[in-house]
Image (cartoon, helix red, strand yellow):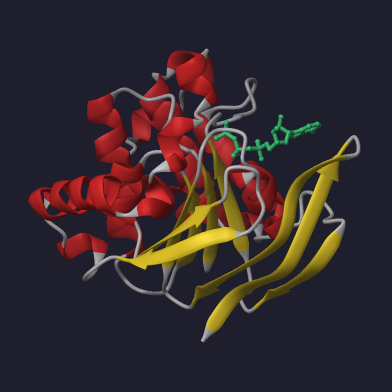
Length: 249
Ligand SMILES: Nc1ncnc2c1ncn2[C@@H]1O[C@H](COP(=O)(O)OP(=O)(O)OP(=O)(O)O)[C@@H](O)[C@H]1O
């Protein structure tokens, strides 16, 4: 069953076309990684799908009931504690006051945040802790779909891996679906069931590549081998690093 369907999506900023006739779907329980070089329109597509930007063309249909977004920047409210940040989204979601402490504690436990961390303000937390709070905030509203927009790009390698493990464990139950934006093929191959590759100039999806098995059962060796084979032999991945603005800069 499809839970997100994007059909013929087109968009332009200031008269410049950034996405053209993009078709993409996500099935129930599926995590799709969307990869492509920097600037090809991945975030714009996710923002359109999530309703943050109105597309100039195309149709979007959602089968999910509630979505959350996790961005590269945790964007926590600086004057609220970690618990206060989670509480804020619960209030927005009209969760009754009496139910909120339990919901906060459950979400915190999912991302291994301690009670003492919950009482800290964002400035008192490390980058990884702040991102944990952002993930807890997303999980607290019990979404059945999550948009991940390069959530771990700013983190160091070890922390990034821990956060990926967290996402893999959270999604393992099969109740969550998601679109995971990344320009890191190894991250995509660890987390996703399927990888979709966006064209360099946002002119269509170049192709889809399924990954074998569930992310939670995938070994590091399997991920490494898959990435090596994909980058050396699969032409749709060839352009990913060719035109990466970050490498040119
Ligand atoms: N608000 C905006 N106004 C004007 N141009 C924009 C805006 N947002 C994005 N763009 C442009 O649209 C294009 C696609 O941007 P987008 O952020 O979607 O790409 P991306 O593939 O997610 O890149 P990255 O991997 O670097 O995050 C880029 O050329 C970007 O400069």
